Length: 416
Image (cartoon, rainbow, N blue to C red; front, top):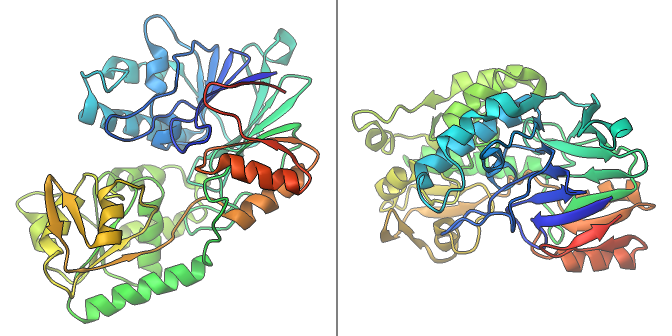
């Protein structure tokens, strides 16, 4: 089995792994100005997508150009999310060199996609008997529909972890899957971080919001639309915090309610959805909401667009108000700038924010201890570290602990 790392090697973003020039696992983009895509445009016989985040699924429609129609395999939520992301990319960059696909290519997903549940093997590229593969998806505990991808060619079993979490979140349970594998391509996003216990993070967030509301302030909660928004709505409902929800997260929340088998507690998500007030944005509604004593869960999570561009300017001048950042802020983003300096470029203007700014680690990735506990099941396997800022360092740590581990580079081909 030959693996070619077209993206996601020694970086976070544009994940794409090509197996034997035939099977492509993930095809994402690296958000930025300009966005960056995998290093070459492959023509696989089949595609499997681990989950519906931009850095793993964002470029999939580009694989359906011309007369190319490779079947695209994923879980039902991942299929829905991939479409949502593609349509958003078209709004931002459509009809420009920054977007490698069109609305026509997005529409073709309907004829190309194949949806699968967890634990049900399916043949790919003709199946093992025809020189192809048997693929099985396992819950990865990252977001609804996220999957570990197990690829078996009859001789070698490859486990592509995708993004995963070993601890429970309110939205999804942590992964417990440890399928037998000879080779593991493992993400390493938080390989040097120990997350604070989720209960402590949640309690600290709830107490902070309650205090601000009691003081008469408003809390703007920037959140990623997929996964994080729904997690925070569940937190707000559990702690009886009045909240609004705005941005792309509204549609994602409604969609996930149609797939109860892919969330940890469908009844809890229903209650959280009923508890939150959905913002329409009509007739100056956002300006009025920004003056209410409530939490406003809104995109974008890094303050790079979305309704946050209305809420932050509206609350910034009052030190009683608060901005609670709930996800990792990539270097160079307005969210990172605000967290570190107290000011940021919002909607083209540099603004000083007098409102208090706080950060909370609601990560949906395994931390250092979670990664090591997961990999303990694969001490006899070969480990290829990817999807991280310190892949080589983590691979070295694994080697020191007795693993056969390495960190491939972008464009590298590896025989396994």
